[in-house]
Length: 377
Image (cartoon, rainbow, N blue to C red; front, side, top):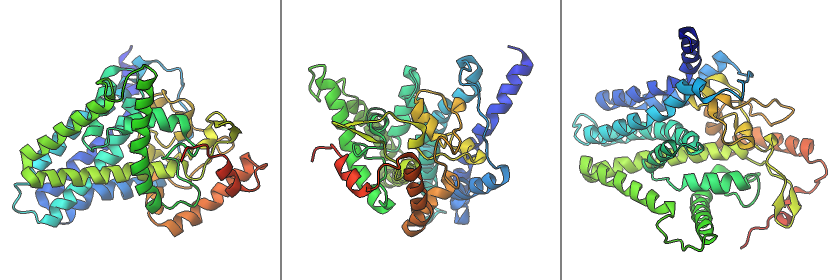
């Protein structure tokens, strides 16, 4: 590999490393207090939305056959983030619980901002890592998820969501006309139960009980217990509360994205509980360049479900003819999702247009959705 090739690959990967610039913003908030505690969420949500307007869309596709050796600058960033997030989170717990210059509200603000990062970046990077065959990367995914007390997301995502996306059996697929405030409590409960049941069923096929130590939930619970204990040791009860604040914000950020990604999209029921294969049309896409840098191409979601093991720099853009497109990137759409009347105004006509385009033969969707639901009560 020549020096010029190495430099070119580093330069092409560099925009995706922009997320690392967010970590110092949380420390600035902790050190200076005041309005600076809002820097991390303001930059994550609003600056990247503005940058989308500046940089526009990215409709180009990398060669999907690119070798792993050529992706080293891309794959390194998800792994490097893990220790940096760990040190930042627990360093902040130690510092903020001893910071007499910060009010209680400012301390909350610092960890709200930290939760925006552990949710927007950390969980997203764990999503990339959990899809890889490399055992180390999967462990790194587990560590990231344990820092936000959402370890079961790995089982739910790999065993339930990818298998049942766009069907009533997937808790994470937001139903048509289901507001986020209804979706959120439903998915918190159902995704935990569905992930545990999926692991239990896998063990049963091996004639093993759920209590067998090979059940990954024991690893999940162990890692989460370590994270909680460490927060207590470094910050006492106050440290534990601040840890829970960032975890709650992170989970909220994740489920906001989940809500946006598949809202109102369904796979056709073929009878006997079977559905058509997952196609690019079963996920909403966004091609905004800057927010895809922040989210490592998560917004190319149609291709992710079409080819789940494809690494993020190789995810392909699917045009309007093959997959539905969001009007804006996730930073804007997740804010819209928090305002149900606005969300329905923007998205419901798009869902109806999608139905007419791909499934014109279905004329009564209310009846169809009931008849295609094979889920046991």
